[in-house]
Length: 178
Image (cartoon, rainbow, N blue to C red):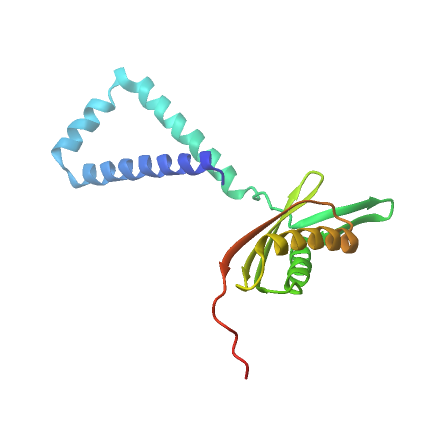
């Protein structure tokens, strides 16, 4: 459901909650509500009441259609080849695993969290890192960018348009040796 349908559902629910509240109060015999009902349902206001009912009916139909139609499924694959025998697809999680392995082999990297985004002519990769304090971040970042770009192209055939390196933290604790 999109934002329009959610807003419509909110208004629709609010209208029906108010209407059912008034109906309950009418059947309970509360005089102000009975007086309001007599004033609203007069022949002079018949056109307004019918228009409101038609609008609520149309909104209800729209919400029913939105509820039963399947949602848009985001494909988590990159198409790398279309040939007469079929398509070759690689899951983005597979590319993320490859990036984790490539970056994890770099010296001074403690933790890697890659994210792959599809683009029209390839992919973009964001690599979030935790590094050791003893490394030069600019040098290691350039090395990571080049290695990721080269290895992903070599293994998958997918063009990497952009490799963004984000250093989330610099680890200060030394790993325990047991």
